[in-house]
Image (cartoon, rainbow, N blue to C red; front, side, top):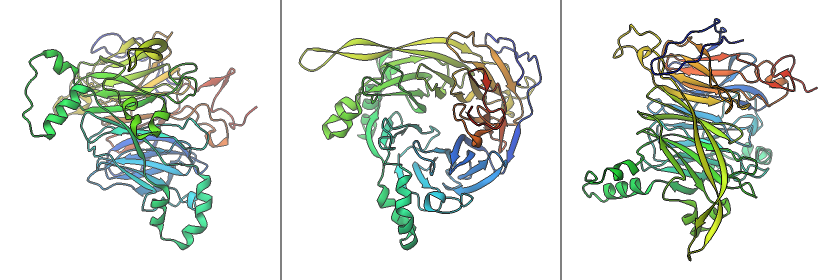
Length: 480
């Protein structure tokens, strides 16, 4: 198992590890920096999906530890910023580039082909977000059982905006009906059949909206005379994550309210709460869908807030920043009165967000190197991920290290391990699911993957998750 570490408190603290870290499984095949990693069962094959700066997305077979296929999803000038399996599907892969597009690709098995054959162009649909910076998209599963209503959030064309869209039905059974047609029709016939995502809301704080409106009109943007006006602006969206519905919490009686987390360049993290999804079905429902201010906001980082990850229960989340700190939060939902038109009040679910603990910043990996010439002297956090058992979380740092921490609300938040394989910044981290039982995840449940600017993907066997006293991932993975 991974080595333990003493609790680290305070800026620039040095790490003292009790035991050596495990050797990683290293996947090499990218010609440039790795920007994204995620675990997925693609067409029945357990995979790590990784995207790189050349625009390629690689599906790695975690059992064979070799590429299953490689997809040139985006141009080398834009890179592949993020890739993950579409919610509710095993045959649709979502990819994002810094070309302002989000694409959905149907795999070859979805077309009746060999799982080793990469998806072919054109994509099933393309969403033009108008965003060209580094904010990665986030998804939320449908409230139903057929894939309809799955949501995607992505930075909008206005630099401070966050767009929430409903994806077309991703029911893989639709692929079976299309297989025969594909033999006779051109490949791009898939695009009009699928349609495109439908924008439901554009979330932007009132101060940012007014600033963007003045800029678009060509009006001079004056410095605010009141300092509070400047503080009201959130700035560029750096990261986004959906907060899953909690039992009896913000999902409400029908399970269809939406909570979204956003991190911004000036260090603020905020929580937006949208109304019932039914309001999105009507054109005039946008007033309910687009609040002017987040439900909660707090400046928790001294520098840009760069990354976010919510736990699977919806009870909390973690943020990371360029200041080198990771901050843990707990979220509780309760009833409160809210004003509605006509002067009356309605009972609504509102969150209380509590800051549990801040981790770091840590001393650089090598304090003797020149900060201007070696990224290992930097302290920022590039990515965070919470394992689905809500026991631990991981953070990828600019100094190339991947650090593990206790996550639970009742835990002390100890630093558990610090992995030092990568020679350049760790750009992304992800955990394999721990709650999927079956042969396809044998030996890999709960594993940690990290990607780096050194062009490698590393997989780590860390603290196997447990259920009923048994370790996940041990044995052949069968139930019983």
